[in-house]
Image (cartoon, rainbow, N blue to C red; front, side):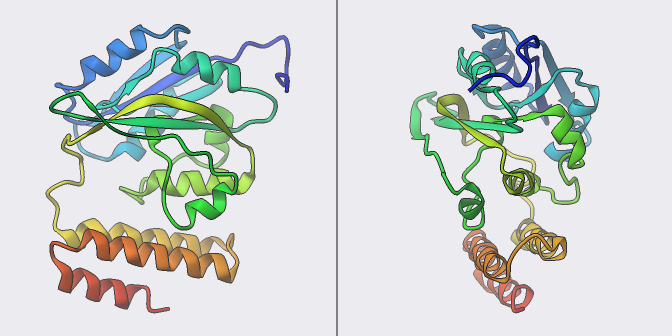
Length: 252
């Protein structure tokens, strides 16, 4: 496979949404300084108001001038060859690149597990789970703009909807290897909210999917079961109200 334009070398902007990331951000930036292929831009968006990673990534995308937007959260770190591997994979008509992730403990720094599984039928996989970590994704900037960026009204699942949107377009390329390290145990924007509010995102995501008209009845039914199950799982510490809501919200 060859580049769509042999005379053009793709450029990469790393978008880093930062929310209360004073402790972890230095390690994130150090991992970018250590890249064997230097990124053309590094854009850190300070989300001090807590508007969410979707807003921060969109803001970074608006400021970027590079061909590709490389996502990396402010509590994660990049493998030294991440940009080089993405550069090598930015071929033909690819619109989204994604790769594996190593999960590591925030306290000890030790690896917890590695997720490096290619999904040949990515759209089908996304209807039953969200197996893609945001810090393992790069999206062409023109495509990001064409689909309207991340849905900021889907806080907590804006990435899942973006992957579904891009998977439907069918131009997603898998890059083998755990090229990012995901920090396990660090506080998140959604942590500490009531479980009913935390689970509300699944109802919104389902409504968006149903209104889009993109899915067959079978696909929509599969997605509904997935979201209902996820909602019940996250409501396990407060099972009655959340499970009741799940039954009511996804009844039809």
